[in-house]
Amino acid sequence: MQGVLVDIGANLGHESFAHDLESVLARAREVGVAQLMITGASRQGSLDALNVVERGGEGLWATAGIHPHHAAEYDADTEELLARLHADARVLAVGETGLDYYRDLSPRPVQCFSFERHIELAANCAKPMFLHQRDAHADFMAILKPIRDRLGKVVVHCFTGTREELYDYLDLDLHIGLTGWICDERRGAHMHEFLSEIPANRLMIESDAPYLMPRTLRPKPKHRRNEPAFLPEVLKTLAQVRGESEAELAASTTAVAREFFGLPAG
Image (cartoon, rainbow, N blue to C red; front, side, top):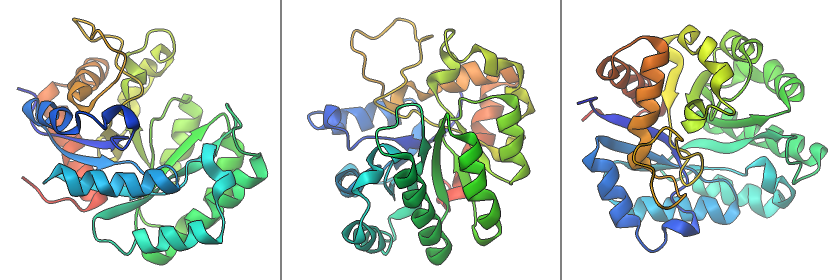
């Protein structure tokens, strides 16, 4: 038994979970995923994340923010909505926010503006930040580094980068979130060379459901929807790469996540 797990990022407000959310949560709890952070990544998505918390019962909390893909929707009304959501005790982190130059679904200057406003919100409400970065490392660092000392805890979720990027984040005292990307031999194998270098007190795991189903799952599910019940597969791969037992890694990632978000034990 690997122990109790915390999924720090699950997009359970996604429409693919609308018809069977209760079953999804039950399967997660059956395999030890006892606490989940439900990711808010747009105006509606942040509302949906809080709705999942209300529907899902114990062990669920939410984030609220605007993903860089949706940065173009950031306006005065959005800022007011985020402020209102972050007044709710069940919303524990600012984000998902950051920069994504891989898809460029919002103009880059708009992404930067939205990211900067989220940083200001996090500084003002003294909450952790839940960040996304893809193909935008230089601008990401240029925005975050000068204001880092005004912020509390920060996690770069779904880290997929290089060793150099990793050490830039560690030097800024950031936490690292890992997903099923590390189980993908096509895209994540390069990370295996340095995953053991992440300090245990900076490391957390997440499903990023419904995305990034671990390709090492056996038997392979008939559908392509990832869900929190598959998080133990991320733990298994990570433990193998780091040369740790699954129980040891489960205990450390759970302790770090609980401390990062201020979650109760047990």
